[in-house]
Image (cartoon, rainbow, N blue to C red):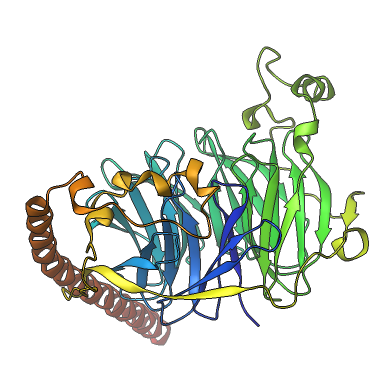
Length: 460
């Protein structure tokens, strides 16, 4: 079965999905609209995300590459290579200038989107890194690994500044709340945990799923959290009251991903049943003052409720016996899906290749090579969120040479510099791989010495 990953774009009517079929799909959710299928990755696409402005689309794959796409019918993409193993997740910083990638090579790598180059790696995990996310202010990165740790990184000094460990299971997914004060983790041990990173304290501990939790997403208000699990359900948690309020059924297999839209009135989910479901919320119908009245034991009454004001402020497991509202869209919602939606296949060509190779694919006459990727913020207004609502399916031609903000000579010089940097980055990547192998061998040697020492002690 396919693994479908769904993410909402800045526009409410546009979403992107990634799948085991190696394709990227861009959907216009308006009735009878076309879908675009992007072809370029050579293996499973594990993660996809829109940039904050919605004018770029990033994807990660098991083919060890990251691709940056312009979401239109031309299929322009730029390929990044620095990881030495499958890439598990990607995440844009809030200003869109940086990209964080997590990989099975035990590293997190940070990329500069303005210059489109590799910046640095973060190494402290001892097993596959499953997820890495920026904080809302971009000063921190949170990561989780199969080594059963969650680490907080400072992007300024590039050091690990905090560490949470679990002796039971590992986290499949981590993410910051909208204020950046807390992180939520989705556990392979069927749990959801919320930590206050300012006081290093576990605030809430939910046990509401019967299978591993694969993904979580905060509502923009920060008051609700939605979870996706291998038990085939989605669950919505009220973080102010600390309880489960909705159980959503609709997928016929494990649910791998879920994501709120920018406004919070919609969310999408994707699962192993090759379905992407779009849901509408009713959270905004609750008045902030009403919520405050229902939480009489809150610490502060002069401001909107936040996660730090949760009561009780100690971890409290939930047994799953609490009465919740269960929703099954197959019984209560009219199925509007079409058996064969119109799909347009788009074959990608690389506008620039970063790091691993220096080969550049030249397009036909009149094709601009990579000026738009060198500075994504200089993309034409046709790719902006305001115009994308009108031209999601069909964007018009790119700006002409005279309309460029970067002179051609400067672009050529930057390309030459990038080619030189790519050689250096490739060398660093090889050294990192060798260092990882050396660390593994050293660990094995230490374990063997420890066993021999114990055996000698037993004999004596």
